[in-house]
Image 1 (cartoon, rainbow, N blue to C red):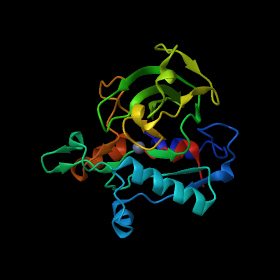
Image 2 (image 1 turned 180 degrees about the horizontal axis):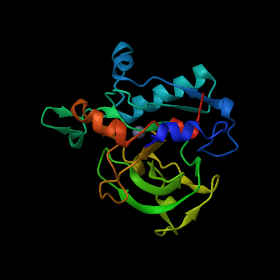
Image 3 (image 1 turned 90 degrees about the vertical axis):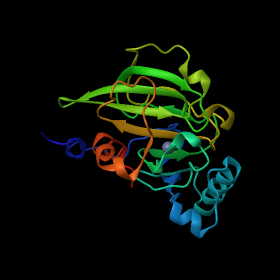
Image 4 (image 1 turned 180 degrees about the vertical axis):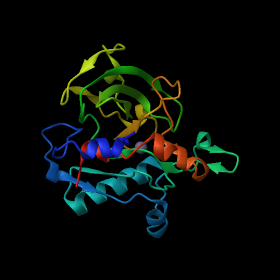
Length: 226
Ligand SMILES: [Zn+2]
């Protein structure tokens, strides 16, 4: 069986936008939000105000409108959120790519798909309003998850609703809606949803990393940023 990453590497395509097409690719910059970096800089990123300040500083330092990154990044962003800790298994390894930019920024479908499920995950530290699309490509079926959206993004959705590449999916939610993060899109690829609807773990513990790494391949296979 060819794997997901190999499947996408055979798609001859340039970078694919996932936010408002009016923001050019040159305005995106990669950032480091790892716990190592946060400790070095003495940043408590689990506080949304500190996090926002860090994002703003990085945007101005890099002259970027969008800063992004974080696939398999070990973070201390989630400390203090009790639902990220189960016994000794601290879930702090990030399974998607985050795109940090202004609240209200449009999110567009990076590839054609249809709505699998959607939900407002309102617990602190969750995704807030979330959409999951299902896709088929070369006999592969897989899912993409869009988290931390606005409440309005879920209006008019129904299971099976079709989106073409570039169609507007929704917009970034504010901290009170998204739930308690600086505004950003969480984008994740999922091979097997394991029965979930409108939600799926976005971080994992070191113990479960091998499973999740395989089940949630690098979203950059689709986006081809860099
Ligand atoms: Zn995220």
